[in-house]
Structure formats: structure tokens, C-alpha cells
Image (cartoon, rainbow, N blue to C red):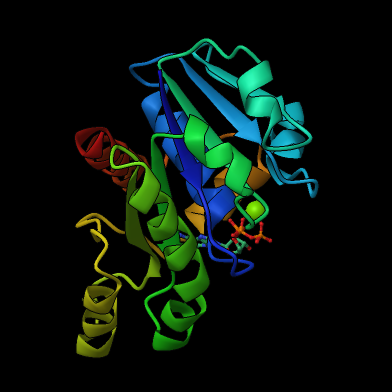
Length: 201
Ligand SMILES: Nc1ncnc2c1ncn2[C@@H]1O[C@H](COP(=O)(O)OP(=O)(O)OP(=O)(O)O)[C@@H](O)[C@H]1O
Ligand SMILES: [Mg+2]
């Protein structure tokens, strides 16, 4: 069982959207539990009205330390956080994914999260982490300033991005998900993203 956390202290970076997209895409082939660790409860609220695939279960946990007590049984656990990744959860996780808009301000705002994740890698070599760009405009590439900044993080950057598509919030708002929505653009993108995440593990 692999545990993947979406983390960024920057509000609105795309943690919940990416968590839903990733969990739904992994559930096409695997048994997945999507854990909502955010008191805001966005993912739980979506789950309460969504038609979930049989391979996807959504669980709300009050605090990160509940991860070890919960006895989760799945191939993948995808965790949406409120941004702060409490240090006591890190030993139970395999991979941290940091979403970031492709703008220099957002990359700067990601620095504390990168520092936290890297500090944990210092004590646990098998803890993996990567940054990925979310809300990339269709048909654009990442600017040189953005690529330069990502390099200074000394953290792998995923080659696969999530583009800025209304289909993501739309699919969630209608109780579907990016894979089941019937929108082939976001479906393929979410599946490609999940494959790249599997390759990281
Ligand atoms: N790839 C995308 N395409 C279009 N809209 C997106 C995308 N990713 C996120 N959004 C939108 O951006 C906003 C913030 O996204 P989201 O709620 O996933 O961020 P978050 O990091 O979970 O925020 P919070 O810190 O409040 O939990 C939402 O309105 C969401 O619909
Ligand atoms: Mg959120």
C-alpha cells in the first residue's frame, strides 16, 4: 500500500482538485482510499454527492496521527490536506506531491512546504517528493523563470502537468470526477498524471 499526500501551505494551489483527479484515475486500475484530512471537508462533501467507482472509497480523518490507527486497506491511499502537513504524519507516507501554479509568486509561496518535505527526507531517505505544475494554460510551456526557480528546489519536478480546465471543477460540482465526466481531455490528463505518479513510487 502506497500513501501519497497532496501538500502545499499555499491555499488554493490545487490540492483537493488534484487529489480527486489522482484518486479517481488510480481507481481505474487499483483499490484506492481518498483520505480527507482537511477540516474544510471539500473532498468529503464531494464524496457525499458523487457517484464513486466501486474501487474508490473516501474517508474523513480528523488529524494526521489517525492515519496509523485507521487500518486503511487499499493499493493506494491519496490524502488531501489543509496545507500543513503535521510532522507526525510524515513517517507513514511514501510520497508528497506539491501542486503549484506556474507563476514565480506561487513558487516562492511553496518554499516553506518544500523545506518541510526536504527536512523529512533528511531523516528518511525512502520518503519521496515531487513538485508539479497545476493550472497550466493550454498550449503554453513553463516560463524560464519558473523552470529556474523549480531547479533551485532540488526536488524532482513532474514532467506531467494538470492544465487549467473548467472540466476539473465542473466534474466535481456535478458529482462526477475527471475520469468519469465524459470529458476526454481531463480524463486522459488525469490518467497520464496517475501513471507518472505510479512511476515515481
Ligand atoms: N487544473 C485546474 N483547472 C481549473 N481549475 C482548477 C484546477 N485546479 C484547481 N482549480 C480551481 O482552483 C481553486 C482552488 O483549487 P483547490 O480547492 O483544489 O485548491 P486547494 O489547494 O485544495 O485549496 P485549499 O488550500 O483551500 O484547500 C478551485 O476553485 C478549483 O476549482
Ligand atoms: Mg483543499
